[in-house]
Length: 519
Image 1: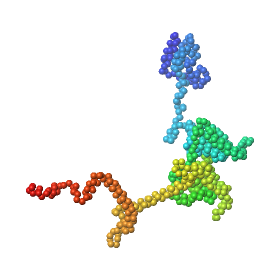
Image 2: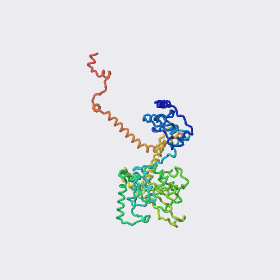
Image 3: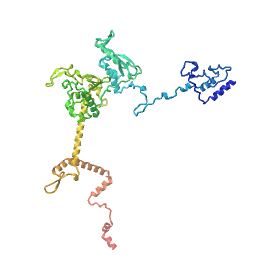
Image 4: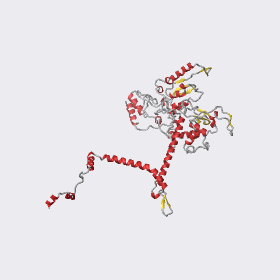
């Protein structure tokens, strides 16, 4: 009983007091965690720090942790005990503080903890993500051309990406599928296999169904894919369309040594380069300032390719590829050296050594689903009329409309300036001396008067008619039935005047008999 009281008093005295730090020799908790005596205290293994009493019944010898039999006592002892090693856990010291200089544009997170933003897994209305998925099918070593119904655009519209040799994977449910139509593996190598047309059509029909059905049951790509007009290009705004055209033109001018000759191109009949160059804004080739790679005169070949949607090819690893062009929509790559004649007589223009390809058709080289070639992909779903125009035709139409609007604005500006000159105040009209010594105003000359009369007669007449029409409408508001009757009465001959009588008029109207009686 006495031992229990002393232990209880020792616990009460230890409340609020810091534990005495142990010397480094005895602090074995940080250096040796394997010893069971140096582990952090638990309710089942506790020892009072100030217990110096002699062993008694129910107590272990000195140096051996005691286990109180009372559960309530074990909880109290476990809570009150603390060791220097436990206080160090989670504490902040000078050694683990890193000072960093803050800058206005710096991020709060450290570079090591920055996570890469993953692309969205389900986005049927995002055009950029559709083109990104379409770009995974570019490598011919991983994806070979397929029939139109199971082409890469059809897989990309339903959320599939290319993940290997003829293998596609869903971005959301991660389901994988192998797409092979007329190939088989022989000794680990793929070889083409001749199959009948009916068999190929059956396989294509089956893959068309798998584009949707191969997704898992709960996958959102199974319910809805991308719209067919998602690849449509916004070319109706002249400012944005001309800015993108100028960017493509600059990229192609940087590759002018690899561009084919103008006679190597086969352009559409409705694409007139000379007319388009005259319809472009006067500052199209000058603002913004062109790079040093641009020629002093406009390059017709670069302009023709830019009008049909081609631009310079840039590899993310290598950089700009000088001898290739690409389409940013269908991701078609074009080797320019294949269409340029190798040797040409500069004096006569005769082709000495032809190019590997006969000619370059910049519209036909696009893929079948590209809006630069396919009018259905460029169709505006909100339009009232069906316009079967490709993207390059709409771009040419936008340039023509912009040229007409600019010409109209210039004409209106010139008319306003001429009108301001002809309608100047009299004080500001210049005066010229005449032979008789009288000053003659320029605006008062017969020719000036005629010009003023010719221009202002029609305007003045129109204004007068409008003014009289307004007066008639205002007058009609004050017309009432009594007023009309009164005007009809006044307009009859022999009627009395409705003018109020005066004293003088009343005196004149008195009869002579009455006047004699008064006198």
